[in-house]
Image 1: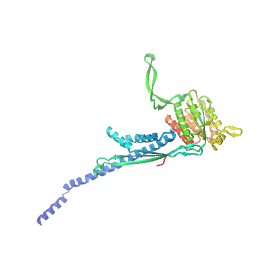
Image 2: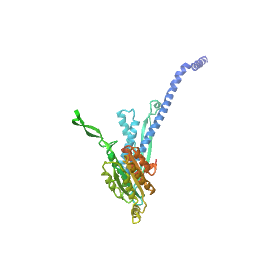
Image 3: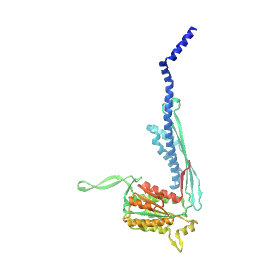
Image 4: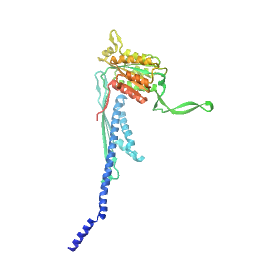
Length: 411
């Protein structure tokens, strides 16, 4: 009995001795506190990683859908585009701090766990053949947990995302479009965009004493404005080729100008004539857009024998009344303000006839921008492009709107 009392007394002393208990309690609680802190850090990093992966699969799904419709890519090509997008959008963010071997292993596992499914749903529009695609992109990877969280016995956790997109080339819209394009001397100047497949070129320059010799040096190979315009026009007409492969809905024409108007094309079915016309453009001379815009307007509202020509052409071919468009592009100011006044007059007439006027100011100064802003049907019909990529994007947007093509996320 005495021994038992002594034991209980000793236990009570231990309990009362806080100095010794602190070490014991710390030994028990500290791992839990560290693990809790690790979980908090990992939760934040996991949310960031998941958002980055979601953005990547969204971009991949849209890129694949766009390639199928706009670039006529095959399904295998579209799948590769989607996988490349996921890899490109996540690699730098998710492999930070990894060694080269760890990155290689991560990429191999990551690509293996990225799946792309494409379902083609060929449909027939009222007057022309078209296609629709559903694209699904899913990806996952093992997110490594930090050392503190691993105290709870788990080394990693899976993060997964999925995205779906839909694209369709179906159109039932009859279109008559005329392009009014600047080919003045300033269109021969460089943009800030480098030629992708040939980023440098050899340039000759005077050197030596009194510039008596000719030397060579390597310089960036920038896209000129006129070449950027050709690429942008090709992007625009690409929408019409995809949406109207049978050339029964879309009629296009073009006119160019510098100090005077050049010979225009007639409005013809499809876009082949416009493509060839723009491909042959060279940059030279001053700027006067008045006559060129008037010509575009007159071609779209032309009457013969008491009938509107464009309406009659479409009625005979597709039984529809066409939506009419003018795309007006310049990179500068007209040489005379009277040309601004003349151009504005025809812009007003075009809007009064319900012609949709899209304008693109391509690296243009303030007065040129002001003119195009006034000519546009609405503010959403006006584009300010400061480089070749923005010019291309503007023409693509117009092509998508006019052809009524669809590329969108569905999940």
